[in-house]
Image: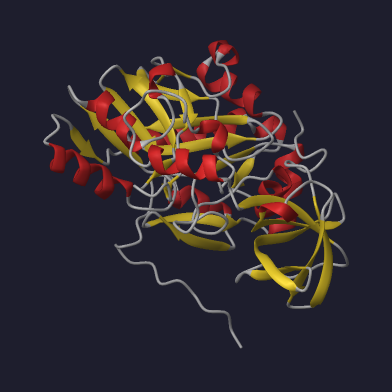
Length: 374
């Protein structure tokens, strides 16, 4: 039986880079924030090895920016996240959990402070613009909340810095991790940040001109030719080795920020005005009962985890595997699991009820040993 196909309509938005990605060749797409996101270029394993040894350019335009600007922008930005935004100078990026009144995750964006009264929330797959706009309206805040025409382009891999330096100049080498700098391309300043959704290192370029974006893509490809550059996309195997969670799969609205392992980004002791912070303070005081964890599943190659697999300990279900893939480098099945806290310590063993039968699994460090090239 033939695999189902995805019908592309105007509701699934293309990007300034779509035609270039497709001219190279692409195996599959998914839909993310109502936009196209590649999931395989050649295949998952080939893309994985190439990302680790060379350099890739990713169309991640689906990382939509929710812009908050105006006199009350700083107040609304802080209300939206339980991270202390007072520590953010202009030029800073950082993970900033967005939670509801009960502490449950609405999103896990990277926030960029573009100016004193201007913030970008680079969101995962949920409609944060509606949540933020509703809060601003309800409180009568003097802000504008909207989704600007910005299409991020990522360059990831061991040679990413050399490629970006060729395009933008040596100044990129001074950009620190989770920082950005406005740099010129064809006399147009673009925000270039040392961020990206891989453990191999790289940059994200925030393109705010669709026509310029195509020329930038071409310039990056030319600059990376000596490093065997090609289009790529976030890779399932690589992200699981690194313990990178994806919102909507590994962490959802069912999970609090503390259960999702984002406690280090929650300023629970700070005197800040943030939706959900009191709920998280109570949960911390009472004790977190479950936790996301990396696990290694024994045996030969398992299929990709489309639906959660039960995790069993002491004869009962104590959690679920949310994502899994075979690592050809580590020669194990790497996975993420949301599970009871008493079974989530490194070295603990559980049983996973997989489509291929019950398998023993061991909780690993996050990331798995040797996940990064850097």
